[in-house]
Length: 62
Image (cartoon, rainbow, N blue to C red; front, side, top):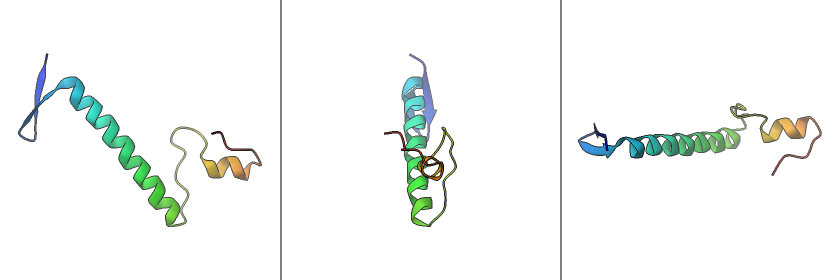
């Protein structure tokens, strides 16, 4: 397996990719919560957000 040196640690390529993706998702979730707490509307990066569904008079998807 191919390995990579990241911050002094040896990582398998797949592990570094998985870590990057889950870290990004976690931080995106944190920013969404913080934006809503601040009264801001988060961007719909992956389609319509809750507020858009409500504004259009539709029931948000579960």
